[in-house]
Image (cartoon, rainbow, N blue to C red; front, side, top):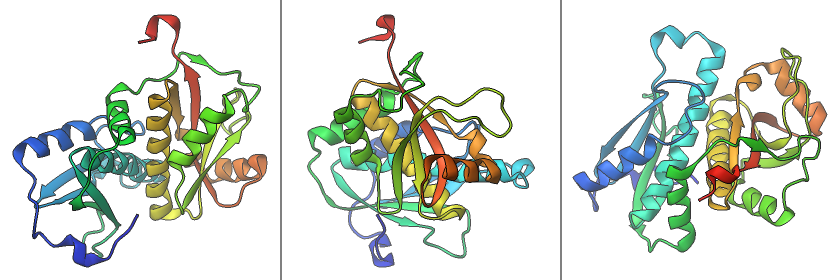
Length: 256
């Protein structure tokens, strides 16, 4: 995912106004983790920079801080997908400028790329994502067709994050349980882990959408350290649980 700083040169391609419009429009469809405007983007030359955009009133709130970075990861996935459809290979740098702490990621159009059918399908999914109204059997995390589940896992996982199917659990501050779903687990916590979690969550949602499924992301309970530790014990995973993606199918009236 990451590249060395020299790729950040402004030489070469410059985004046209039309390309900027496409990138900007696509970014508005990334998952926001319950926040109004968790990121802002800046386009210059062949770069797209993603900045954390947390209002000053929320900066002392640990949950908002965390979810804002996760949301930036979701935006990063959508922008990288859009860069591919625009005909470029996206190269990504995470937290590339120590003097600008709010800069969480930079996407660079590094070289020409012919969009594949998968690229086009993922881009279409950006605008077709739907939350499910009919969940899969909440008692059985294996209810999804294994081929579909494995395809989503392959599309979403990175070297720094994995996806683990889990059964229902009870959150620390809720009486009702969570539905089963795909648990996003990162190798580390902190800002980098949270950003990677957003990347993985959004990739999983786009892949599920492209495969005809609906989904509902769950991030709010994971704000609490105690709940994340509880999920570690429940799922038997190493790393930091960051979010859950509950999969479902469209109701008959929602089918295309």
